Structures are given as C-alpha cells and as structure tokens.
Image (cartoon, rainbow, N blue to C red; front, side, top):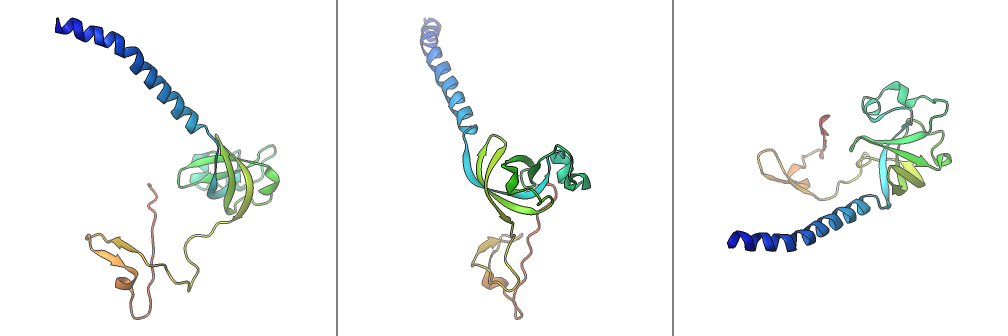
Amino acid sequence: MLTGLNNSIAKRVLPFVTMIFFTASFVGAAQNNATKTGAWSGVLVTSACNADEAFNESPECFKNVPGAKVALYDDTNRLMYSLEPQDKVTGHLGDTVTVRGTLDEDTIQVASTEPMSIGLAVGQKAPNFSARDEFGHLQTLETLKGPNGTVLLFFRSADW
C-alpha cells in the first residue's frame, strides 16, 4: 500500500516538479543572455586572432588583417569580445584599454574607451588594507611599512 501511495503522489507531483525545473532553466538561460552594462578591460587584438593566440601574445594578433575587425581580449577570463561600433577602437590595435558599454552575448556596444591603468602610480599612497600572509598572520599597510617606505608586488600566476 505504501508503494501505491508513493506512486500516486509521484504521479501528481512529478509534472509540477518538471514544470518548475523547466521554468527555472528557462529563466536562468534568459538571464545569461540579457544585456549587461559595465566595463571590460583587456588588449585590443584583431578578430582574426583566437583567444589561445591572444593569450600567447602571438604577433599575428596585433597586425591589421584585411576584413578583420578590432576585438577585445580579456586575459583574466580568456574571452574575446566583438566591439561595435568599430570607429571607437580603430587605430588602437595592441593597446590595453578599458571599454565601457553594453554587453549583448559576446558583443560590446562601445560607449567609451580609455587606457587601462593598473594599480597605483609611482609615489601614490596605497589605501589601508588587511590581508593574511602565507602563515595566516594579518598584515596591514602599517605592519608592512619599512623605514624607507613600502613596495607591494602582487603576482598573478600564469595558470589562473
């Protein structure tokens, strides 16, 4: 009797569970394809180049190729983005930039571009921070400061 009851419940509940799963999948897919406003940074390469070539800094990625467009290669995520309109990026092949605009699938509708800046300028004061070192000790700007100042170096591993 218990098995019959479980089958009866399953027959009534299964269509609802299936509908909820299908709806959640559809909504998730729709959200992934939604346009997104923001900023993306990377290097401007030719669209004739693929992400692997751009990652390996192939010289071919920085050459003008007839019929190819300028694209943005984001080395943090290893993604290539198409850029439109091209007039905002033409002539900047090889430049490291931040592109502001709207992302739709893999195309950024470019609102503006600016040279990408990384870190602080020489002589600029670092903001207060705290982070744990390799031994688990809390370090701050003050605990690291030496008599002649402080040099901070952050190294991004090549295999991230």
